[in-house]
Image 1 (tube, one colour):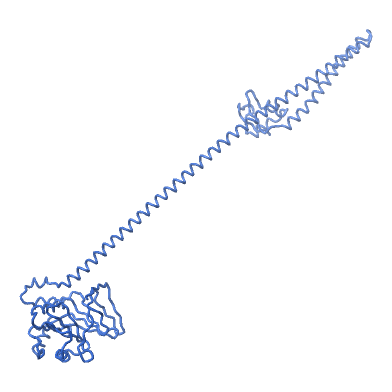
Image 2: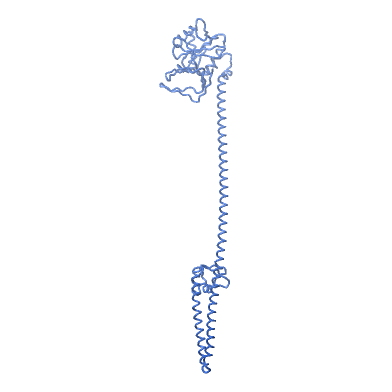
Length: 419
């Protein structure tokens, strides 16, 4: 089972040092807990192509890279491979001669100067699940150590397994990791050492795993981009809906406020008009009451004066005949004179009675003085002072209270405040 893994930033820490692990990887099998094996994808591509050249025969290659320690575990990073097409696996083993090693070191010097030998590769048609003792012997003799591994594959199958020396035998590793990077050294080695292919064809060579992985990565990026676009559109539409709702609610609230304000203004206007009407009616009633009081007082005074005068005259006329009947003819003239005197005295008494009757009327007028007076046609301040107070000395007080500068100039319908 092959599990593709894509990590944006993979870092591990340990007591020895921090290792910057590859970012783009895919896991083969289960992670190994005794060592971590990383092999670059161009190396896998080269080894598969090397094995495919001779499907019925074995192929051998040297694995190159470097080893680092972290958390007490060795991390093997395989970044190169040198194919040994002259070597084959036989019952007698694999003859790693000095000439073969010279070829290996020559290729390392030219293409992989900064890499070390980390193990070897064997393409074995129909290789068994358990490796024989001859392979164990070769591995121990030439590739001993915990940081050296053997990669075995069937030339007709893309699957491959790593083995490491443990407890006196080659033990199959549960899994390893393929990583992807710009491996320019391996690309150059593949192009320059390939047989029967033009340089252009080699430069455009690309393994199916790379294509598959890059396709997956691209699809993920496109899906991520689409997701970001959809998220942005969703947020934008949500924001737009919220703006529309806020505007709608604001308009509704403003409409309700304007309606309430219009109703309040209408009620205030009606109330003011009603108050104005009531004030006008009150002023009209007050004016009529003032006119009626003044007219009643004047009529009563005239009636009282007239009655007193008539009574006095009647008394005088009655007394005169009685005196004439009781006197003799000699005293007629004297009695007539006395009667005239009596009549004059009666007139004096009548005038006195008139003055006496006028006094209560004046007091009553003063007591019932209204607060205001509405000017009628033909009125003057003198007439109003006499009518309201029964005297002429209130003209200045009326002018001062109403701010009148010219006492001879008042207007019909004008309301005057009375002191």
